Image 1 (tube, one colour):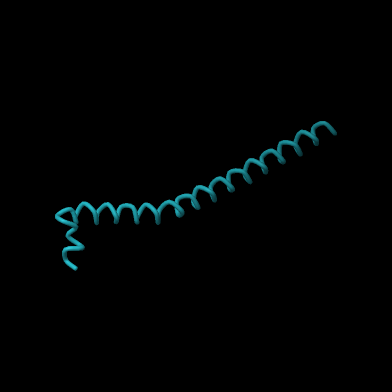
Image 2: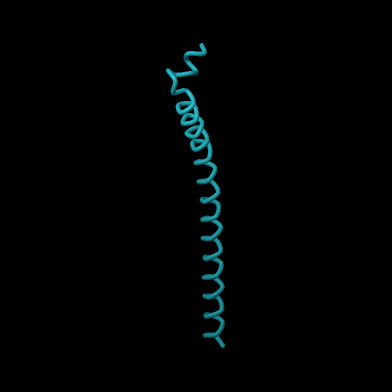
Length: 63
């Protein structure tokens, strides 16, 4: 069993690499989720601004 973890003398490199990949595979969906929420929030903010501008423009045309 210890030979399995030692990996022929390359165990430290192999297990550090495996750990790094595991961390990145966990972080990727988390970071994508955060970016997705930010994008949705920005789109909603832009839609509100555009609607506000259109309402303001239509009110000034009526005056």
